Image 1 (cartoon, rainbow, N blue to C red):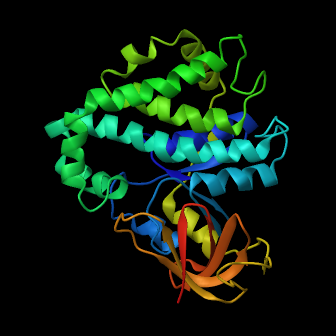
Image 2 (cartoon, rainbow, N blue to C red):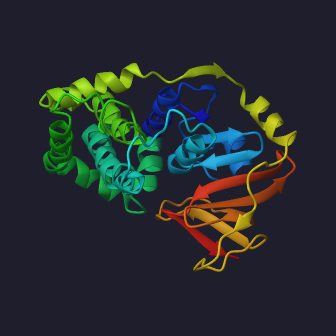
Length: 305
């Protein structure tokens, strides 16, 4: 996994490794662009984390968790008869709830936020008017905290019956997806520990999730990860399911990017696989050879070129 220690989204995936007790290689990347060795693999995608399995490159934690579940179904990320509802709920944890956490963390920092970090993350998460957005987040911090306390109280109520995890006795993907927002708030906002102390069952659950660990990791050099990609071939499935609203087929030229105005470079390539949940595209360059880059469909824009 290509990531850095302070990344809350990477923490989500690290907890997922802990749930499944996997062994993985840890490639540490810079917190700020440029990230030349990462973008060589992805074709321009710069968000964190990215999971690499040989010449298959998985972007976005949504895509990563689905692939981990497919390859390592036991123990499951979905100890429930309602997995579809859990994926729907994850769009809230990874979307509005995480955005709220980002605004609290960045907004509370005010003028103490390093200018290069403020511009990069502000543009990524708030948009082209990031400077005004960060100023507004600082001014509206009490309101933002009030908005965060409501879902925290819902979680505390869910855990009030003494269950260890959100769905019961076994950890699930939704625990990792909720936890990364709370981990971010606790560790990166001065007021986080005090606010979280209001919710004793939530705090108990935090300790349970933390105890899952991160599996077993071994450091790996970025150069070795690139060599691994260059010396293997993509091994993932090929095909396109019917009824695609964009009429995507194997071989269609496309560009893929997050569906936000974050100023990010689209990744271009030919469709290798497409269905309602996933798109995977082939791209070739001298640095890494031929790789297959995987993205979720939900939250990403696919443009036929």
